[in-house]
Length: 219
Image 1: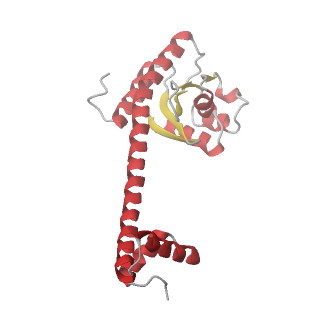
Image 2: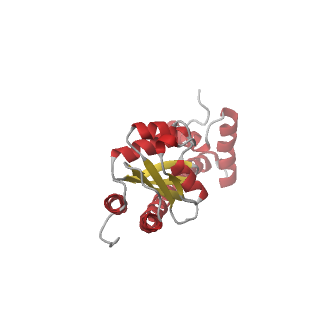
């Protein structure tokens, strides 16, 4: 599989679709990632997989979360007889899921996850199935990691842009104060900061209002 020719989302979708066609048990497949203790489904081969993922997220418990957070595979051989993570097993069985394997993604910094195999027939876990799930998890971790790095870079860029915008507004207000009241740069900022503290308002908002109205103190 070539990652270079596809978007991150399409690669993950191809991984889940391919896994659904290869793994036994007529499964539907999903990929869960957990960042900052918040789980989400980044790809799924069918709506049933998303539904069962969301049921676990809603209860903050389930095999996919356990695999993602512990780094160990989790198997449910018979969903109808599974006592753990209630009421999830009953809900899954009612939706037609008979057995399940959640295989953790290879560990990455600040992100964890799992490949979830929701089988519609009872299939005991064997070495071949475990090995195949591990290979698909390894395929999935590359675009997942890249997606996380990209989103983190975008967030940092947005924070930097917001900080630069705030700095520009504050510097403009300082310049007006320096010219109008013959203040130094430090004195001009202190004047803005004092109004900010007196009114419990952000310095940027004080500066923006001053630029628009010419008044430091709101009447």
